[in-house]
Structures are given as structure tokens and as C-alpha cells.
Length: 282
Image 1 (tube, helix red, strand yellow):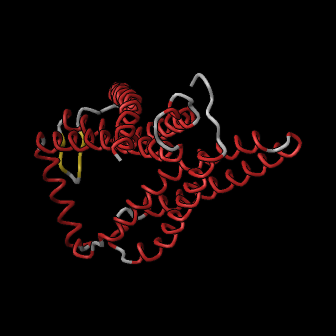
Image 2 (spheres, helix red, strand yellow):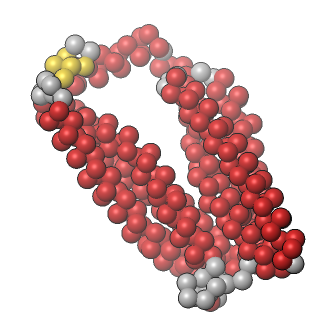
Image 3 (tube, helix red, strand yellow):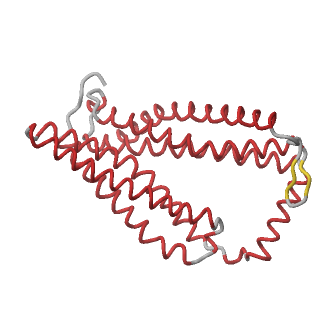
């Protein structure tokens, strides 16, 4: 167990470095976008929320936070691509496979460190959003009045007492399983292709690799459409967790995703232990 966590910490440190880079690029791009918006939009020196006038500085801070969080989707996707590529380099690296652990445990450590570094990036983005909102809230009486009005309306009109925490937890669980599935399915595609090419005759392996890739692509497209429909539902009803039907209707899909993660993860564990050979100079 000590060896596992030692390797995990080392891999996490390596994957945190590109997380910092992606985060800083997102901060810079959001600043540039804010500057362009501020210089090209008429009457950008102030804003209003629920009829309350907001001074220019808090308005700019709020606008920056909105822009920054919008760019999070692009930054997170870029980081998922980057760490998936890094994952597969490490999985087949002769150097990393010399670590005194089974290849399957190295794979688990590699996958979990990538996922945790992604969560770390999301946490950094969330902290920026939280700090920006707190600064804007503290610096503007108009924002405080607007938020108080909004909370009062929600409490009186939309009944915060009906909030269902279980629905929110189901959404968090789904997001975690979806992030894990990204790394698991990419490794599955890589491992099966490598194993087929290495152990089957040349004439048959090309067709089987094509079939495997087609199946994986279908599964990915299915889950992407599935996730987009879910996010579309949440976007159309941002207070979904006040509807007790959400968790009960969405729980089967969450369980299905958990089963996918376990099946493909177990297959990856077996493939890298038995069939996937390391490469030199990685």
C-alpha cells in the first residue's frame, strides 16, 4: 500500500504541472476577453441586477467570473485530452513498468492520479469563482440587495424547503463516474488494439481492431449524447434538485455508468497484466 501511494503522489505531482498551465492560460484568456468586452461594449461601466445598480468594478469582477467559468468547459476538455495522452504513455512506458508493483496496480495508480489531478483543476477553477463572487458581494451594496431579493424570491416562490439533497448527490456521483469512464475507455481502446496487433495474425488483427474501435466509438457517442441530454435537462431546470423525481429517474443511468466503469476497468487491469508489453524510450 505504501508503494501504491508513493507512486500515486509522484504521478499526481507530474500531472498537476499541466493543470497549473491550463489554469493560468484560462485566467489569462478570460482577462483578455473581459478587456475586449469592456472596450467594445457601450455603457459597460455599470450594470443592474433586479433593479439594483452595480458599480463598474464589481460589475467587471462578476463579468470576469462568468467569462472565466464559461472557459472552464474548454479548459477541462483540453486537460482531459492531455492527461489521457499522458496516461497511455505511462501505461506502456518501460521505465514506469520497472516500479516494483504489478502492471495492473500501476495502471490503477496512473488512472486515479489523472482523475484526481483533473478534480484538482476543477477545484482551482471553483475557488477563483468563489473568491470573485465574495469580492463582488463585499464591494457592492447593490449586489447584496440583489442576492437578498433573489434568495427571498426562491424561498417564498420556489420553496427551498423542498430541496432534495439526494438529487444533487446523484449528479455529483454521475460526474465522477463520467470522468473516470473517459480515462477507462481510452485505455481500453489502446490496450485492446495493442494486444490484438501483438498476439493475432496480421490478416485478422486489422479487422478485429476496427471492430473494437467501432464498438468503443459507439459507446462513447452514446454516453456523450446521454450526458448532453442530462445537462440540457439541468440547464432548462437549474433547480432540478427540488424535484424529487430527478434522482429516481436518473439513478438507473448512474448505476449503468458504474457498471461500465467496473467492466472496462477490470478488462484494462487484466489486459495490461497479461498482454500489453512496455515500449522502450518512454
